[in-house]
Length: 240
Image (cartoon, rainbow, N blue to C red; front, side, top):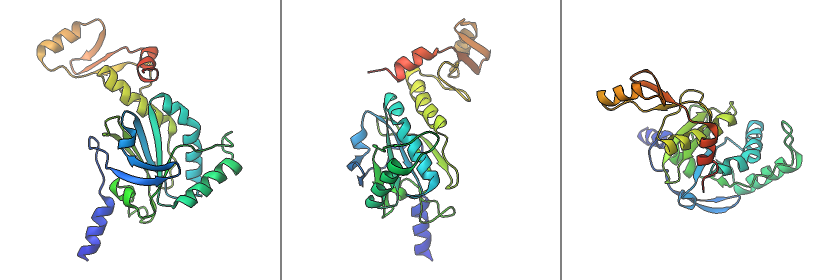
């Protein structure tokens, strides 16, 4: 009984926002990777899917592949994972390219690495196995990892729910905008929307902020300022 509890604790443990991304070496459809060391200097979306040859996962992989260049423009690389073997991965990705059409997408080639994780070693390190959902399949986890190898955002979906890719892209842009301009992004933020200015650290700063014409303060704690779309895109998408 005690051993079963230890195993369950190992399965459901997971890293947290602000933690260094757990390290691992793995075989993928694009060769061996050493994670996150091989991706230093780039943002990474590390995501898991339940199984190869499943319809929801197929729709997701086609969408990720179709958007890969768009993510790359934001200095973001994609890395997928399931607990299937390498040959299953290869056969599935070939089937996607040769046979599957979805929302006008066809002949889609997946060029980003898909990790073989039949031992579930990586999935367990990242808490991708949720026993109450399924003990032998990874849920739809998404880890946003920054160029220093730090986990910045985590999103989890159940097996039945396909991911919202507009949101995944919005997150990678918003995280970088927040870093670049030292601001926060409000609900539903998109490039071009006003951003949140951090809370004032003193009464004097709060008073000055209320009188600053570039900052719109509804009260001392709720202040926004304009940040135009081109400025955001220049710093996030077109920075060298």
